[in-house]
Image (cartoon, rainbow, N blue to C red; front, side, top):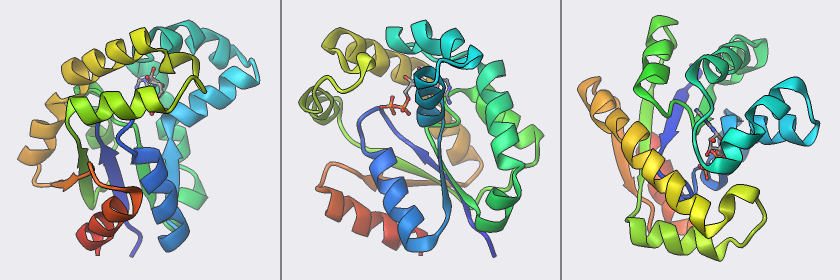
Length: 183
Ligand code: ADP
């Protein structure tokens, strides 16, 4: 049976790192909407140019754009065969409802949890590899997460899908907790 998971959690909590480790271990397809957008920006496609200013301001890309992209990816044969880890999607209640309307089966929503203090330290420590890792933009991204994404915690609790993992440890510690949770 293929497994489908969502990784939920604040920016910098390690969703991407852990999702790629799980992809290696279990061959489940890792899908990062942030990475899809960054690739489009690098290639200067129409989509990339459209979302660049929004992403660099720390805000979210409009739901209709993001939903359409995710729908296409989830409809691919590869994802149907391997299952998926959605990293960074859904990020709004509208996006979560979109998955439901499209009858996307979910086996679990893993909340990677860490305090604002730990998150701030990690993001600042990551340095300026990305335009949105500037200290001012980081604080916007945390505000946007708290306002637009945190409601998903109760949304998925109500669906009985939420599993919370303490993600304040090392990558190895967090990975072990995660493997335990999904096995
Ligand atoms: P992080 O988790 O560190 O914020 P991501 O790579 O997941 O990094 O996302 C980077 C940016 O891409 C977000 O700040 C947002 O602007 C945009 N983005 C990614 N996923 C979504 C989404 N599901 N909805 C709207 N915007 C998104």
